[in-house]
Image (tube, rainbow, N blue to C red; front, side):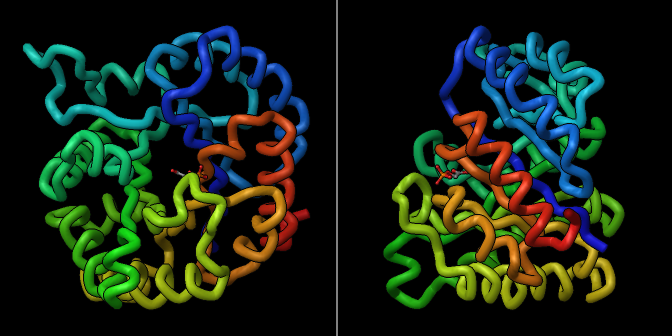
Length: 257
Ligand code: PGA
């Protein structure tokens, strides 16, 4: 069985003080929810304080990016070795990094391998643009992105990786994909591609999340879909009450509470 994940992607939001307030508000209610992996992916500047604040809670900590080298003359970059001291997970290849910072499929693959080598759980993002969606290219494009991200990964490494299918047109727009469409792309494209690479049994164990305008109103319908193993949530994960609700509803949608 695939354990659901509800990951918050804070993007470039929250100071250290704000992130500690959030942690103190959500820890107790979230500790009561079983069966869902809760991960907060926070800005680099907050990770040290948050890793202390979340010790002994059920909430895991993630970063939002890394660089693939372990150390060296790479001004402004952070390595997996550094993150490993503070967190358990890392988002790789978010569409904002691909679009704003020019990350290529090759860079995503290198980052993914660096994360795995140092025992961080990668959450790799894939997803098509509005133009690709309207041109009917979603299946081909997303399949190719998955293939490129997982290139040369072993089955064991693939099993340690989570994927987030995040259509770019749904991110931050308030316009989520329909639950049926998200389920169809996740099952029919992302999992199928993994099946061709690793075999159906392995693909059936890999967790694939949906992201893009998930909120407290649509989360139940999305998480009730059989192929959707959780969510990667931006805006709604910034509000403590909403994040707690998202986790609780995910647990009940998966029949865990
Ligand atoms: P959103 O962002 O929930 O604000 O649409 C999702 C994401 O970018 O991961």
